[in-house]
Amino acid sequence: MEKKSITKEKVVGMQVINGEGSLIGTVKDVSFAIGEAKMFMVVEMKDGRTQEFPWEDIQAASDFVLLKPKPKIEAITPTPASVASTQTLCPACGKPLTYYPEHKRWYCHNEKKWL
Image (tube, rainbow, N blue to C red; front, side, top):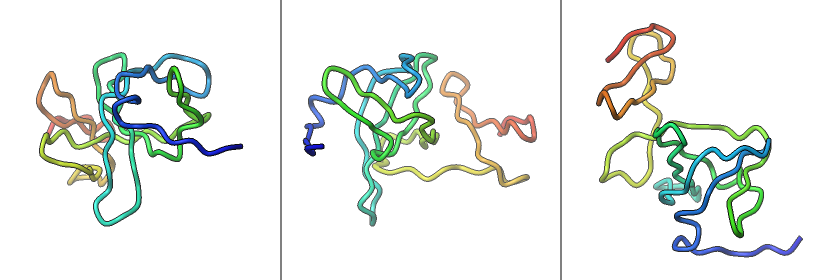
């Protein structure tokens, strides 16, 4: 298969379809991991959350972005100045936290506590 490139300007605003064929959100930005050659697609999900998908999880992009089946979903740290994010972990159990912008707080689903 021929490898094609796509510009950030073209991909931002595209709808994102998961590997099962469901519309899951819209591309809002592209981010880069500092010190690594990794790129991520920042997607605003249909429920308003923001999630980051590694570029390797993209199967195709033309009129919309199609993800490979069963993509890994990573929550991004919602800091406007950050270019790359690291996953925030619960200080009590070490499991990943979920950020809820409407509450402006982190939540641990394992501990069932707001932080």
